[in-house]
Image 1 (tube, one colour):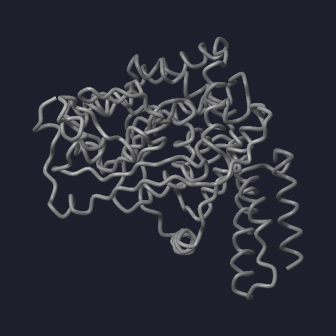
Image 2 (cartoon, rainbow, N blue to C red):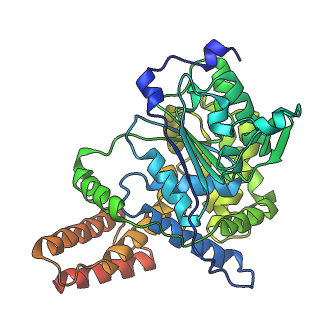
Image 3 (cartoon, helix red, strand yellow):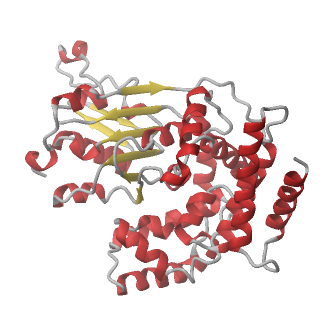
Length: 413
């Protein structure tokens, strides 16, 4: 990788705005002595992610994918313009699990020491080149690297070791990294082949756009609530590790046929799926099953294939090509991502059950008339979406119950 390819021009003020955030939520452990089962652990993570998504608009999929990547042992690349809440989604997913987070905006003049830590000068006098990593990326559990492709050759080469092997090597320093997931962000996919090779280490891809006009009121309201919302830890990194262990132990024998069939269809249509990605897709399917509380993956867990496709056009084509195979997709822990990938009825029903249930619990009792009116309008919107998406005799039972409760709530206003 040439230095000129890896280090692109950036304005000086862009570098000056580089920010470094290091925080660990210090919340007393509430874990019981007994080891919870996979279903119980999945419910804890589900509650944590639901809380993390509150106040975020059009970024629920991003929170879901951070969790999926963490359980699968993979990494996520987010492509989209600045100011689209990419870093906020990562922070909230980390806070929900009490994970330590390293966050940095890379620029043209970013030095390796800014990410990995300075050389220990005391040991350098003794001829040892060791790095002081405390509070830096090698000791983080979650990482967010904005403008990740701005990094120099030295930075990207060191990152490769951390991403691939969870090992930091520099001089005489070699240590295991607790990193669960690294989220890289950029305005666009790199065109340089050497940078594209680095980008391929991010198995999951998400493409984000600014919040659309019809949801701007929600964005404004949600933005204010985010400023006031305290950090909540409803799950733990240990929960993610338990689900990751279950995913690694999952028997994928029955799913290799459906996965291979989906990949053949994609390749036949001209969608690029490298052998590396084809193999690693299995870890995503297993992780989706674990996050849903299932020890054995099923056809309901095929939907992450879509997010493994490296381009936005490829993902759109994959949704259309695999629509029949993904029709059974659903995931109560990652409802937004499952629906986004599959556009399937079960995934849509799962999301609507969650959204409707949360709205019903959030009735603004005793609030002003304006708040009650806005709450009622949102309930009506959910009811309309249910009616538009499902025939009256084909509404899943949990969704039918939520719809009945919505009707009762609206009639009781």
